[in-house]
Structure formats: structure tokens, C-alpha cells
Length: 127
Image 1 (tube, rainbow, N blue to C red):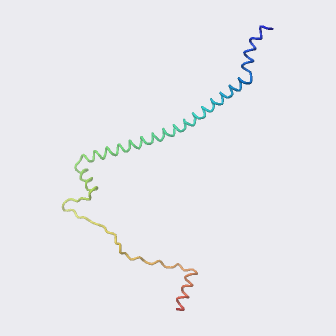
Image 2: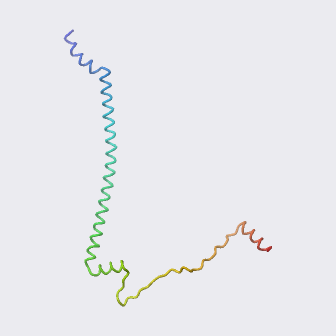
């Protein structure tokens, strides 16, 4: 019977309560790390989508700017740009200036009726 005791000794050590508690704590730390990693993965995928959308916007802007540069390489494009920025006109062209009338008359708002207009009517009637 003594020859079987060394084989059970290792098993007794592995199945002891302190070793099982240590393994349980290690398992909890491992699960905690995996959960934290999954949270970081979701944030990373969201950031990746934001970055991809930004890249697409920048590519669209690059195409627009390239077309603007190509347009500015022509004489008509340069002329159009100068006219837009500085409001210039060619010789012989007329200029129309639209001015808002600041002294416009304001129509007074009429009362829609009601109890208070009835009282004002009687006050004005007896004056």
C-alpha cells in the first residue's frame, strides 16, 4: 500500500483548497482581462469606422480641390474666381446693386378680439 501513496500525494496537493482558490483567482483575473480586451476592441472598431469615413471625406475633398486647380489653370476659371472673390466686372458690363429699405413702414398688428379688446372698446366709448 505504501507504493500507492506517492501517486496520491501529488493529487492531494493539486486538489487542496488553497491551490483551488489560487487557480480560481487566476481564472477571475484572466476573465477580467478578456472582458477589458473586448471593450477595447469595440472602441477600436468604432475608431476604425470613424477613420475610414474621414478618409472617404478627404478623398472627396481631394477630388474637388483637384478639379478646382484644373479649373484655375484655364483663363475662364481664373476670371470666374476673381469675379467671385472681388466682385469685379468687365468693361461695358452693368452693375446692379440691391439695397434694403431701412425706412420701411411697419404695419401695426391688430387685436384679434377677446375680452380685453371689449374692455378697451367701452373705455374709449365713454371718454
